[in-house]
Picture 1 (cartoon, rainbow, N blue to C red):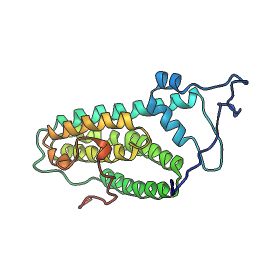
Picture 2 (spheres, rainbow, N blue to C red; picture 1 turned 90 degrees about the vertical axis):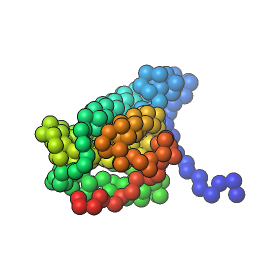
Picture 3 (cartoon, rainbow, N blue to C red; picture 1 turned 180 degrees about the vertical axis):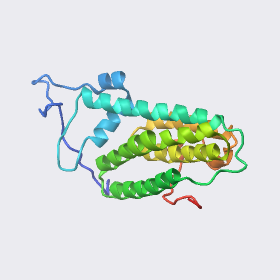
Length: 224
């Protein structure tokens, strides 16, 4: 048998639902979209914009929206790198806060849900759940709270930086099948920033590239 599993993807239509054809004149050139919005943005659009059994409409507006998501990932990463490098000591981390416990409760559940969705070939739903977690729970909620803790300095700042680094690592591993280029680049920067900081124990067993890194472990850290 040449294949044990065959996945039939949906039909791709233009943004108003018409079948793409040269006769209609609505052919979408993927190279043009990638040049304008990035390869990851188009890849994420194709993977997340579909549901099993239904055709998917693709146009520049959808790809642009996911380009904004890639920018969001990049900007969160840049902020975290600065927060990690600024740490003076990690000899003792502060206690987990309510916000830490909440985000650590949400993320393991997300990992388990994504694993289940992958096993049933629901790639679009898996991507949407990762998107919602990263944008809403992590970037718009937890990172904003962590900024206040980082400004306080001391043990609370060290705990916040530690949690930020670990959560971003797991998010990048989850996103890597969807947006491999931006996540690989960011993960390399994250790894170097951690190894050059007092939090270097986090990345001691990390490989040199995200593509060969292990899938996230859904267990919560001890004491959280």
